[in-house]
Every structure is written in structure tokens, then in C-alpha cells.
Length: 102
Image 1 (cartoon, one colour):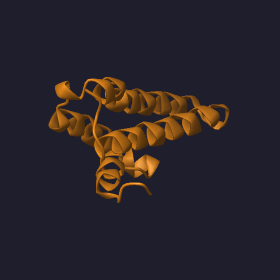
Image 2 (cartoon, helix red, strand yellow):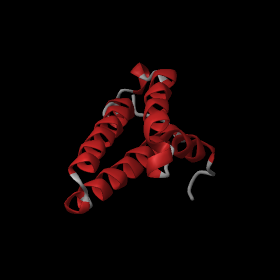
Image 3 (tube, one colour):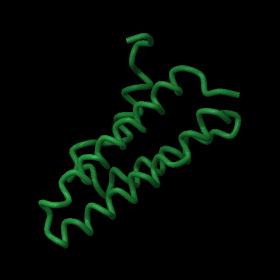
């Protein structure tokens, strides 16, 4: 079963924002010290850890565990939101609450 709305749109928004952040970090690697590059790789790892199951959730919604998913978002946020300026949990919750068809 496919994910219903608004979960479908909210999950896609989380993937989109995570990809933008990972791309930003990759684009800036040449400007970073070795220490910052290692930090960026750790952040990218946590980003991918937070979102890697979303494609499965979109197509096998019957296996969806929203609390478990939120735990991964919270893990990223607790480690990186102060640095990145984004909260994946807020992205998800805001997208869930947004009017459909925006």
C-alpha cells in the first residue's frame, strides 16, 4: 500500500531537504579544513540514517512505524540542527500540517 497524504508529501519533503543539505556540504568540501570535512561526513551519515527508509515507507506503508521514524529525525536534530539550521522533525511536522495541494 502506498503512503497516503499528507504522509506522502511530508516524507518527500524530508528527503528533499536532507538531499539539499548533503549537496551543500559536498559543494563546500574544498573550502573546509580536514576537521570540518570529517564533521561534514558525520553529518551526511546522520542525514542518510534519518532518511534511508523513506522509499520503503512510501511504497510499503503498512510497515510504517512513525514513532521509530521520528526517533531517527530527532537523532539528526539533536546532533546537527544547531549547525545546519534545519530540523528534520520540524520539516516533517510542518509538511504534515500544511494544507494539501499547496
